[in-house]
Image (tube, rainbow, N blue to C red; front, side):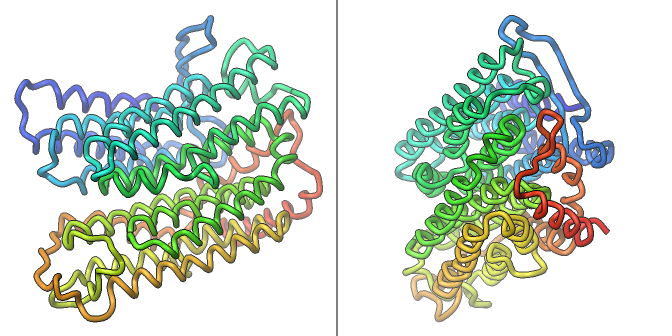
Length: 509
């Protein structure tokens, strides 16, 4: 079953290129059909998946290159399933929101499907080397998607993305190779490496390159500089996938490999990681306030909000780990909505400049529906109750506060700044008198509204009923904190017990 998430997009690529002559609408329809089939497969997997097991399910294993330790080993658990679903959902949204007159449609939809296949493979891989291959695979389609269909500086942005992510992959591989070599393991199987006992100093030396490599992907300060350029130059569907899914490979790697394989070293470095999270959150929020491009505001906001996941992961309590997973889903949905709506504004007005745009909420001549959905999106990002952004951030701060009080308070300040820079953007762009040059704007079609409406409904639904997503990861939060048959203790034990009781009473019952 799990191979379907990898093979179905590849089948779509074959179908797109099978006929010698194919119209652009045909390649689009094939991509939509395949991505919809992947989403249906996700739903089917959800009915079969047992969230109470707290272990890898639906395992697939094929011996591949034994002498290298590389095997085709797949599995899904409470950490990977929500992200796998998010990947399928946002891929369908990205394909649907792509303009029908896109240039070179065959190649474009091929790259989107290849990207979906690579990300799904990374979330499902239970072999470290297999994960690395999928982790690197997604670089290729994303590079071409930015370099070919991007903005004026697309070449620079694509090359910068390529260099940064290549370094990221190299550091991740160094950590994996070092782990296998020093543990004298016969392969790269995740489960067998989890049972390996290494000295603390050795764990720290292996964890540091992994942290830097994944920190580039997230990204956290000071490894963030590739992200704003990539977002600004990328097309709207690509920005949607980049923020909504691709960045989650970094935070997924922190939980899966950082916490899962190097728990003792992780706890040792966790105060530094929490401090870095606070710095990154404040830095992203401060930069967002000064931006004049709507897309850059959302991009720097993304840096700030991704730092909350690092904070929660550093706290290493059951509540904070569950909150980190929920925050990944919340950020994926909210950032996808914001980038999608910024793209609509740009297509209709030809500008993203907050100093130029005015009064777009005008009901007769502006973009009232787009503006209303944008207000909903920024409210969700600012943590207004009733939306998924509120419950995810609340649980992040609630789970992290007993462990890292000062860092959590600093992140709370960054969260408060979210309202500042988004209110500045909303007030300038959507309120006031409509800009005279924008009195005859093209009509927003329903095909452009539907993806944003679906994302908005998802954000509100998960905000009201967060257990729809949280329930998948309840058991996995405990399993991640088990290393060498010992549960994390230290000074966090009391806080963990408190968080667990709060979590069970407020989220499960």
